[in-house]
Image (tube, chains in turn yellow, blue):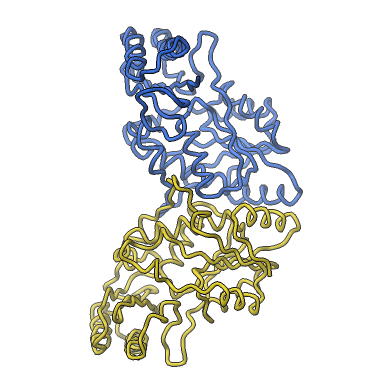
Amino acid sequence: MKIIHFGKEMQQTAHALHGQGKRIGCVPTMGFLHAGHLSLVKLARERSDVVILTLFVNPTQFGPQEDLAKYPRNFERDAALCREAGVDILFAPEAPEMYAADASIYVVEEKLSRGLCGASRLGHFRGVCTVVAKLFNLCMPHVAVFGEKDAQQFRIIRRMTRDLNFPVEIVSGPTLREADGLAMSSRNTYLSADERQQALVLKRALDETARLFRAGWRDATALKTAMQKIITQAPAAKIDYIEIVDDETLEPVQTLRKPALVALAVFIGKTRLIDNIVLKA
Amino acid sequence: MKIIHFGKEMQQTAHALHGQGKRIGCVPTMGFLHAGHLSLVKLARERSDVVILTLFVNPTQFGPQEDLAKYPRNFERDAALCREAGVDILFAPEAPEMYAADASIYVVEEKLSRGLCGASRLGHFRGVCTVVAKLFNLCMPHVAVFGEKDAQQFRIIRRMTRDLNFPVEIVSGPTLREADGLAMSSRNTYLSADERQQALVLKRALDETARLFRAGWRDATALKTAMQKIITQAPAAKIDYIEIVDDETLEPVQTLRKPALVALAVFIGKTRLIDNIVLKA
């Protein structure tokens, strides 16, 4: 496995791979890898000749009150996991390599990013779109794989790829879960043992919504109320949002007729967790 | 010469050219070509194996009060000029091909676009950056050539290419002028014979500033006053702006120490014309 820290070297390597007719698959991550990330590597490998995993804790997608400084990092462990998973190139730039001091260009999304995490994390998706556009230009992938846990992010990146005509196929991989149902996340490491237990209410609320939907419930308010009841059973839980939105436009829905995204963001103590399911008849 | 109207076909063609090891040069234009555009084609040709000229009157860079509907168009004439100039591919998409009805992604610039044309044409450079990002992804050029008449645009596109890491070399070509000094522009066609004559004050003002600079003048206010005097001699002239800014940051300067961009935007009747020179000791 090759480790690259510099953008120019990454781009030259990608250019050379294109010249050799190699198909490049890319898995953008912020590191502190878990089985969820590695399942995306597997999807990338099935669709390409050379897999690049990018590891970059992107400052522009963190708000001033957020956890940039304490975001978990462990480069050696990540590199070992990449090696085991058959990653060919680990691209791990530092922030000054990615953003010039006088950087002034951003990629913004103006519809899909209004609600959900976009509403509670101002500027977050601007940072995500900007860094993913940069990573696409540096890694020049034919296919890029993103996790469905970040449901809104996936839809926004798919939109960006379409609207800016990036020659990249966007693929998503299903959310991986711990044995008890908690969605895997690098941020789970923040949880105390007690919080870890209480965090299960997210998945419980989504499971209950799926059950009610199968039983015929179609009213979004009723479904949200049911979820709220379950989540507030956990004393450490503070709801950021519980939303049911159209799966394509991400506009809130009242009555579920088309595929709908049920998305949650809940603080368990100080740790903000997200989870989601898609409901379709 | 091949004419392509569809993005997918353009991208597939570009991909195939990359596969053959061809170097692609791109000249983005809004059509109604003149010798200035063709001089950029020549620069592209010197630097590449295959020259793509893009012809697209981009709606997102026009303000609601601007001349999108009446912007001059003549596809047959443009195609003939491209053929003569040795363009290999004329990429001429229609607006619905370039922008989906629910398009929601834009590329924005937040420093260099604050003043000059960015201040008088709100949203203009957002439209320019967005469409150039799209054209880069569709045409996949190794080198792209822009005219120096659009001084701010050139600097913003160079910044975008750097900040988003587009694998494209950005080259500029000098402003071409009519025999009497008027900078070539598709918009010159709007001018009546009398306005055409009065439009010469832009170049006259710039020439006088260059003369004063060579004579040792370094005070921006004094130089701007001298230009204002010349321009207001034309009864049809209405000054949009007369600015002297740092050539890199585009911040206004008071005393000229480093290379400075002298930029004018002047309405002659209803037609807005721009021109500029760079002063360096």
